[in-house]
Length: 175
Image 1 (cartoon, helix red, strand yellow):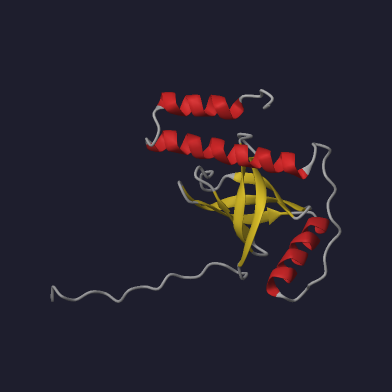
Image 2 (cartoon, helix red, strand yellow):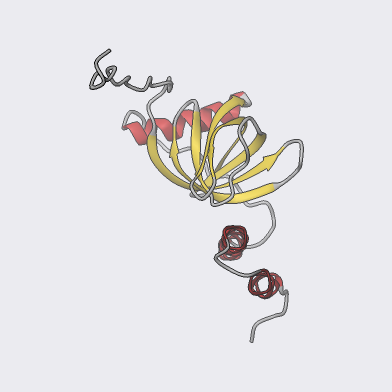
């Protein structure tokens, strides 16, 4: 047998059924079994799913409930983790959604693809305060997640991480 023979490289099979579009929005993903909550950002969207940037993604096959919010519009669906890599993020495939939610997704995809420039009515707030507060909460969640990831990866000692988390979670009013 010829030692220099190498079999031809196999090209990876594209498994996506829908085109992906670059799309940045906030997302809350809840593990439907463990009830763990992840607040993060998505970086792309398709009719079939989305990609969430996260240092600590959920494991493969985790069932989640998503709420994606962009410019006062929201989309909710159930999904399953189909790709997960610590330090990077996770890919999710939508498994079910209400018809009204499908219309929101279709509108976003239409805007992203250039086939539908019209806007949907904005979703009203949930009574939790102004958008500035929500933005600060999202930043805090992101910092907490990043701190936990640094502890797990050995970039911070347990004591340093605990001190940072205590400071982030402190509810003292700032002068």
